Image (cartoon, rainbow, N blue to C red):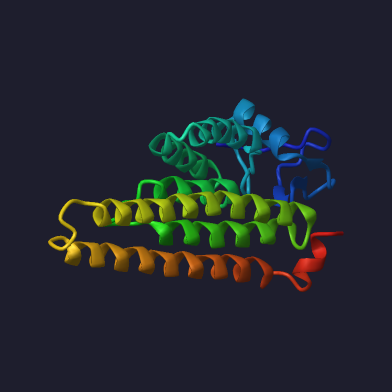
Length: 217
């Protein structure tokens, strides 16, 4: 392959430095897109990695994923958020809602509450790495809490409904062991949800030096 050649001085020693490709002879700087264009047109190689802005591609993937999630098509949402993570593996929104979409598929026998809390903690941490103690961070935290609480409420209602169904079954004296088991499951789920709430609050605010005050700045 040919070497990448500087348009200004003809030099071929071009190396990636920070966000630009820089000619080491005349110090002319090229953006990643310009360097990529030169590489394609000239079939050349260059030291360093060309970073392509994929923000539009990620956003397009997220648009469809959000729509599926809002429509409660959780299997489709899981797949679409997974596709977004192929493009941007550390996208906080995709991580959060992929985990939540999976959690909505939980059952009495296999509730997936841990997947939801893991996704929440990971996404909030990544968002804080991106934005620090900013309004954008706390806006994301509030959105994440609202979405996670919606799942938690649905999970709680699932267990309460299960208990009521068993308790109201015909022949209560006969099904008493089943009723007691259903009650134990409901109580255990309530404890798990309470622990999830505690973890959500602590995980978000432990990231900040003065978390509560930042909300009002």
